Length: 441
Image 1 (tube, rainbow, N blue to C red):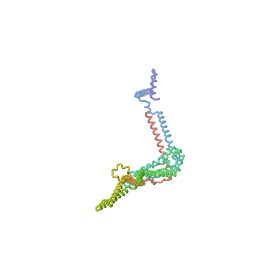
Image 2 (tube, helix red, strand yellow):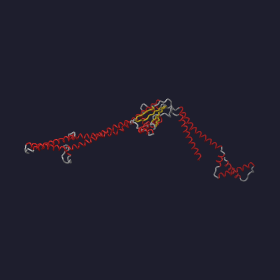
Image 3 (cartoon, rainbow, N blue to C red):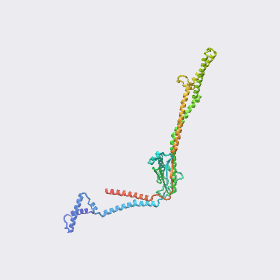
Image 4 (cartoon, rainbow, N blue to C red):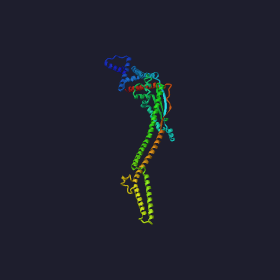
């Protein structure tokens, strides 16, 4: 019972007895005065809103308070032992005495282009320009491929990842497990195969870990082989993309040239002549020869008219020759053209050399243009092929898969320390939250 309750009980008893009080002794009188003063003090503390018991507990901790504090501290210490020390000790024991050794194999390679680097690009490479954009982007593609689900499907059939990563089946923490879905297999693959890309040197580093040194080398060689196949595919795709547009241009030019040549063949079959221009030259020469011969006959007639009669046989014969030559000249000239407007002559193109010559000239110009376009397209195709060959990609391997002689993994001390710090941190958070809630209530 607290002192305040004792004082209240003493006052009640003194008021209840009322009438008769025995004379106290000297020692009893001093005790009564002390109790009276304490009662007044308690009354003043209560009137001011303070709890006398708490003040007394703070000033003079009682046995009960000490007992509660000791119990609380024991529970906190027990919680530390059960939630931090014991699990971290068990985990450390597992890491040092049960976890299996892991052997690593390292390989390094880079994606390079056969295209010569221009002198103006060397400064950009030195200043951190990254060199060729194509090789950098393809390096990222290879890095993502090694960390993707595709490489698990592309690995050779004779590489059984489940058997390799379950050789130490007793080590349940680091072994792969069996009959896992592809997503879990990919997560385990990325835990055991570390891939890093150095953008400065454009080098890809691959480190493979397994429970046998030979298995690590086998997996690293498979990763290197699949990466090389991927780079070859990227190079071939880049080459096809570069050449495809040039090949399409050649195909269009070739189709146009074939169509024009078919029109030319149809024209020659219809007109039954190979070259109307040559025929026109022959016709012009014929007209000129006939015209010259007619002029010669007319000159001879004019000479004979000086001493012969117009009805003489010689003069009549010359007139007949001149008329015949003139008729032949007129007939030949009709083969060249009608001598009038070309309107309405569409149906007489076969017998009209001028119209046939116009059609032939148009076809010849189109054929020449189509042939030049075809030749230009072929030259562009050859240039595109040379450019595509110069842009070929290849995998430059300068660190072949290494064979480990000593186990470097797992990091037993770091894992154990990490587990202890994690559990200790969680325990500290819980304890701080408890004290925070306790102080507020």
